[in-house]
Length: 225
Ligand SMILES: C[S@@+](CC[C@H](N)C(=O)[O-])C[C@H]1O[C@@H](n2cnc3c(N)ncnc32)[C@H](O)[C@@H]1O
Image (cartoon, rainbow, N blue to C red; front, side, top):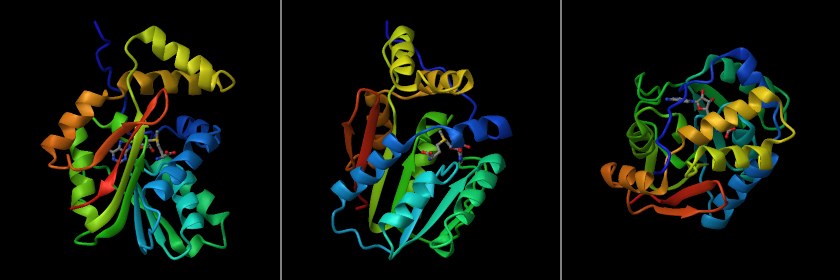
């Protein structure tokens, strides 16, 4: 029987874990995330991008570099991550005025954005943290302008724990033990394709396109109707 989901802590609020995550090398998946967006939305010229579950803001900053016409707002529920994100933004003086971060624990706190809408809503590696995944899909719906570009990427839950351990060995073999453990827990907490498709139906977002893009990642992409 396929392995059941084992939820992990929602917020990455422990300073040492947040630091270990920020220090790890995610350049390959993070640059792929930007490349997927550029491939799906080749004519994107929007001015406002929202990055949900921005963590240390590596992807947030990459979007500001790739789209110089845009301001990028990253939101995360974890103060420890936001502190690291702010440091990273300060080091990017050329675009510091176009990248901001703020706090939102999605599903637990009222949205801090009021009625503000965005031309793109992106999110990488947040869904698997969500205890109630529909909260993320509803947040995307609520913050996206009509026609907005949406890109969500995350891990897929492997069929067995042994498959998950093999993925950790293949892609994080050189990382610290703490990071390997976090990665394994993330794979065990990730959703499966059929679960994600059900979530999209429930959130009335099933016009978005779901595809498997690596041996461990899916993306959901499309424009808000
Ligand atoms: C694995 S990290 C991904 C960070 C970043 N998107 C990246 O790709 O590097 C997941 C982030 O989502 C945040 N998070 C988890 N659950 C959340 C929620 N319900 N609301 C807001 N942020 C959340 C965590 O605090 C953490 O910073």
